[in-house]
Image (cartoon, rainbow, N blue to C red; front, side, top):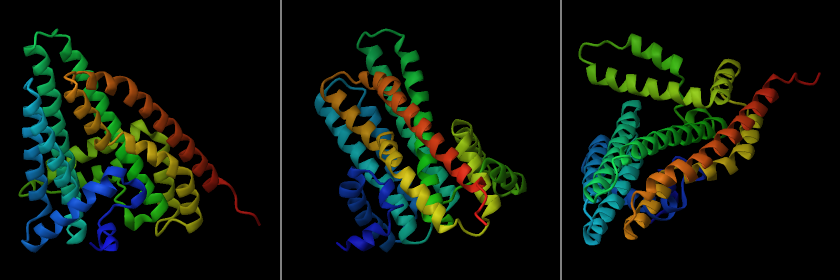
Length: 304
């Protein structure tokens, strides 16, 4: 396998997790090659992976380890497909905003199924109805954590690799695109754009300094970000990217699998509310410091 070709389908190595680099991306690349040879579109791969993920979530409902293990296997396959759709898009130059939104929506549907079936499993096993509140709080935390991690990763690509490496949209620009998009014949595109705009607005509220930095850079450097600024951001943000990686899918899957194996899957909810939210607070704090320092650097007058 040509490592250079495989790495060409990465977003960038710094934002890829350990399991992605050494497992999922390698499998995803083979899948992407297979689908590319058969002219299968990335969106189709997304939906196939989503179907595997939804079925995996259903299998977590049953209190039988063998069935749970089968579900874990399907979940791994789903995650491989989730990697493959993006790699296929980059391999065949089919990247699109609607494709990214569909991928995100399908991912949320898969995890919604996981949370729902774990909750029902607890209730059928004689557990308290309070599990609904716990699951809701954990699910909302999960959504916020994913939004923050994704926003930080996109920002890293944009600020440290250059504007061409990331589709770093603002809610204002997306709202403008939404108003200009005709409703007739583009109904689905309009819905996807509305979903994307809402998510981006939430990200900007969660990380306002980063949104402010993005706006300032777009205004002051409309063509490209100066190399010096790219280097400063890359140096400052690389450690944060490692922590963001812990908020992504691979860590959640590992913990979920562990709790299923010891027959205490609802502990996953408590982990979301405690460990992951503490990590979320740390990432937000560090990203705010980085954004503030970069804004001060841009605003500092150049020496005569």
